[in-house]
Length: 92
Image 1 (spheres, rainbow, N blue to C red):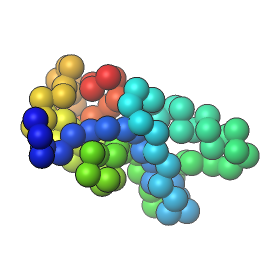
Image 2 (tube, rainbow, N blue to C red):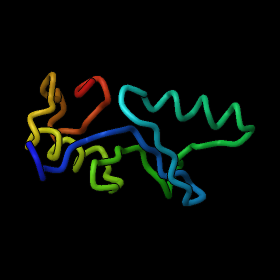
Image 3 (tube, rainbow, N blue to C red):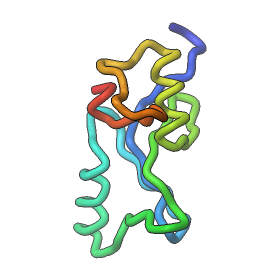
Image 4 (cartoon, one colour):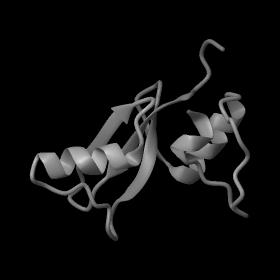
């Protein structure tokens, strides 16, 4: 669907305000591995969060990402959580 926002990658906003992202079909664990390889950390701790990137260049948290993926018909499975949150396994 042209013009519709879609989930295109995994991302982490770390505690230092750095945005880490990798395209589909990567998982958040790949970002942590990359950070470790670079001898740093991508841990979100209290001031950051895990999320996703979209085709329009936005970082969104897991809750907003679920709504975007749902609207774009990207979900392979429904979230089992009361407040739906997206995991990469839900979309690829």
